[in-house]
Image 1 (tube, rainbow, N blue to C red):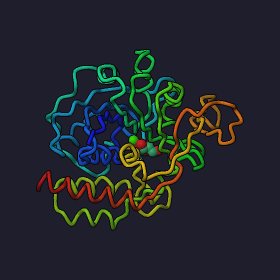
Image 2 (image 1 turned 180 degrees about the vertical axis):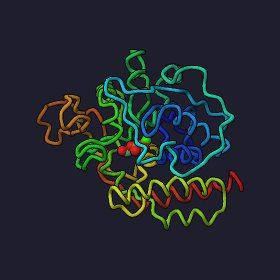
Image 3 (image 1 turned 30 degrees about the vertical axis):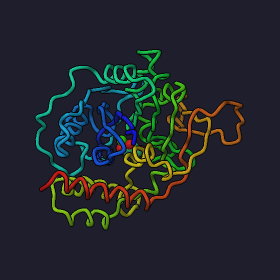
Image 4 (image 1 turned 90 degrees about the vertical axis):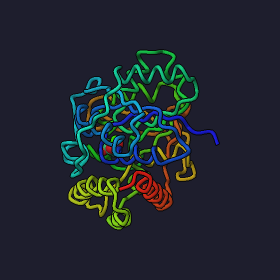
Length: 317
Ligand code: BDR
Ligand code: CA
């Protein structure tokens, strides 16, 4: 079995943390690097969280590089009400002893992709600033990316940050614009599908049957996330967007996709950051991505829970 070689570009972030853990628990992928960005929390916290999560999972060999601390053009926006000020809700992880990679994220992205043309899959689960910078710094970067799976956008779904826009595309719409038009083979995993994937308190209790630092971390992080979903969106449980975007890269049957031309609004008005698809080909443009529009949520959740149980057993108590 050929493993998918992946880099996760992320703003951890509660559901980002779950995506990192899932990558470490999945034999069909090799996690080669993590590049961090601002987003759910500050770059400082995002970087610390990425290192702590790797230590929690005993995956100290994976490089973590520091990326953008602000969007390209827009003012900085973080999400403390969703993920807590630290980015990992009520979870408390020890100070990391792991060190950050000595070069900026954009260098690591470019180096990995250019050294392995067509071989690297990027899982982009935060604002797209780091990826857009790599596209602009190295003209041969986009053609050399194997595939990119992006958690972002809301096509036929309400926004979760403005009435129209999803958080990752709203945080840095200009970066999303650069990436969407870069020519990379894109699969978009928008809110249309991720909002079907709800991690419930019953799911959490199932994981807690295994007493381990991993299940305690998941429980404490998601407790905060569940309170947010309950209070702001009347959802019982919490939506775990980011691990779905990862899983789709090796379990494509989890979603149904459509080839579409998709763009993001950067005009600065009420629809700033809104992603829209030209379903009737009115713009006469070739599709620039595959978009996931339907999902089998319980299939995903069963798979996710089984992998977390396995990882908890591996890590030990
Ligand atoms: C996205 O924004 C963040 O809150 C999550 O980590 C996810 O990547 C969902 O809109
Ligand atoms: Ca994220």
